[in-house]
Image (tube, rainbow, N blue to C red; front, side):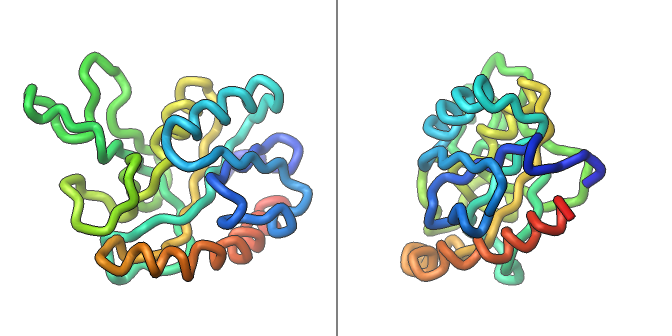
Length: 186
């Protein structure tokens, strides 16, 4: 990351405190947005008016479609996995009359499919990870000209065991993310 990321100019957006405690992100501005695309957008829009961040870092848990992914990963490609207008001829994840489709930043990283459902089975859209907020936040930051970074902690394998695995692992990524934050501001 070449962008100047500091505690003063960056807002961290996390869906819920179970994923990242204020102690793990000590000194950083943290917004708990609530779960899902709508809650993320409403919370972020309000916060942008008051906080005026230059950078947003979205952190949270994600299910993986790959058996070889564990730990924290940067995500740089974002797709809407629940936008399905294939019946009218559009590719999965693309919205009619919307200039912004899939979002990809020019940095190495994984792909994430965002939708308003918890993933427990194979999906139609091809991505490495699945979450419930990242695409919406990436699109808002793109529109608002705010630098966007996303880090996801793999909490489950997006399969029939995902619910129980997520419950066991939801809090595990916060410590590792806290270490990453300290390295950014060091």
